Length: 322
Image (cartoon, rainbow, N blue to C red; front, side, top):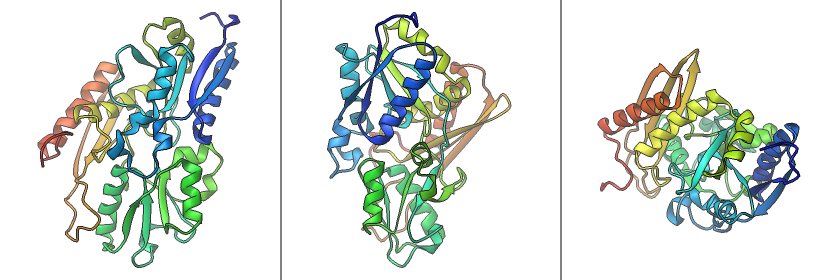
């Protein structure tokens, strides 16, 4: 695509404050390359349904379907997503054209009362929107001897979740550190969980840009924004999820880190339990692998190998019977 073209690149974006920040970030990057860029704000089903967990209403793909419709009918050219919200398999005719450099991939504890989990009061309420976080938090709380703490669902955009905390509905909540930092809210963070404490979701902290697969002009225009180390790392993480069934109803974590040309991938799978169940939680299944990675096929192969380790350890693929 010729940057001097008068036809603007239209970005489809959700209208939450964080989604708009992400879209405007991409807009600024493209404008710095000489392109004209406009935004098309949209409300998705994921934004509208706030009274049920995502796993019960169709998964995180609810955040991207309307944006894909805008790409398909020509109202927009590209869609900017938090990569952890992007389904493992894109619909036919769509492509992930670019993965940008990752922000902080870790999870963050936000509270007006405590600085760490051990300080939670008796029978405290801890909020999260993620099955992955719920399982990992329950594992951490059990090791602290804090089975009294209740983990409750927390839906809504980032500002809504912070408001529910501030109104006293929760003693603490867990959010992605990247979103807080992008919106200038890093001061709300009381603790950043290291990956060894709470393993992030596949793709967490990275932005992905989706296009129609036949838009080679856009794929070329977006190429300068791609960050290859991030793309390879998240490709290995997403392959773990894809190999395990790619469902957000499955509590699964996967996170890769570089050491020179070697990529180390860690993954964890847990059994979701009813919070009313007084029995002990099932132990987490963990797996890891490392190898030199220079291209996407090698990154994908690493992800498949780690997913197989999870299955060998007792993790069930999404859809398997209990």
